[in-house]
Length: 231
Image 1 (tube, one colour):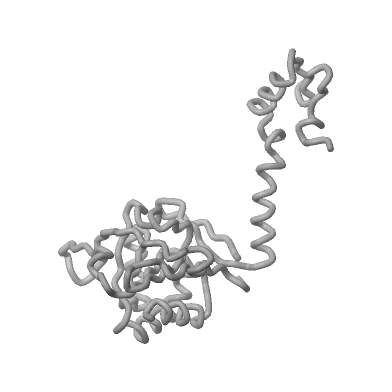
Image 2: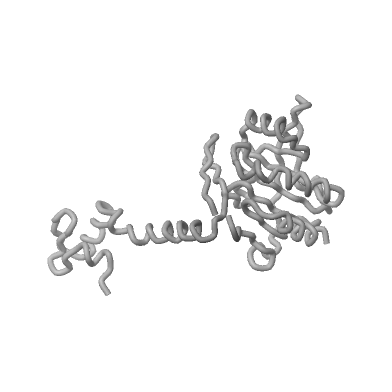
């Protein structure tokens, strides 16, 4: 079967069909194609993953925003049957990485830090949040409801991108009540392999990752995972 590369060159004379240059060997021509005509040479291999992603987005509809650094956010729409990474299939009870982040507190000028280890022996609900993420905003009432329902048995923490002014506006407008931490260098985002917001990571009392929930989901998806983490 002829490949994309084969169709772009004359293998007997080693002539590039794109620009017409001649080469003494097929390997020389191949190197030329990789360096000078990379889009054509790699086009199929690069294009297929993108095509697959587009098909996934088209058929499943998951909504997720990807922080690009600074104050930019890339949003992909993925909604209907959105992605939940289950304990047994994906996380395999992986130990949650330790972290220490500053608390964002509008009522105090004194900087204080919170670490995951501060809550040893307690289940923890981590919400990775960005104040300019529309999907995060939509989830606020539900997460507040979960915090009221399970706050006596589980610690709720918001880990936000470093957009303090926007975060202040969101807190004042929507009345966020649980503890908010600022990840200035996206270090905790990276430790937990978070690529988009909102992402919710639920830990049991030993701080093993019980469930990862990405994007907008019904409240039942959260209550099931929380009750499993609480045990």
